[in-house]
Length: 209
Image (cartoon, rainbow, N blue to C red; front, side, top):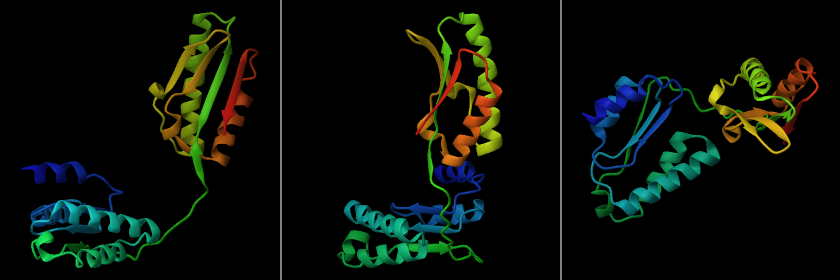
């Protein structure tokens, strides 16, 4: 029942490429995922019991190699080789298996422009009334969402953009900045566009690095 639930949850994940079942008796779950999750190319699993310490070390070796090489098959081979150094009682005499979907292309490691948190703040004069701030903030919030979507392909929710009152100013900022990753070029493009659109006295934009 749990397997059916999990396959339903993950079946729509188009970017899920590798699933690791680092637990005992997972052959049925591996089969179900391979049938129901077409995006998945690799499934690593154990068919019998696996001791906790062996499972931890297997996972550590697997992800360490994957981080360095971005190659699931190499990571699996290295981690499996490590497990062979354990007494067979730690993995019930059965080493882990890997399923690879047919016609899976070799991995390609692409490096793009560096991305960073977009820490973005709009400062509004304290002399503005709450009603004026609300009007400004609503308009700027909509514009920030539109510009981030068009220029950085980021779909930011309005709840991520908050308005707070400080002693000398009102502040409108991206509250979820560390999860909103952009390249420097994208961030500057959004920033410059907003400056261009809002030359209103009392409104100042600050883009932090």
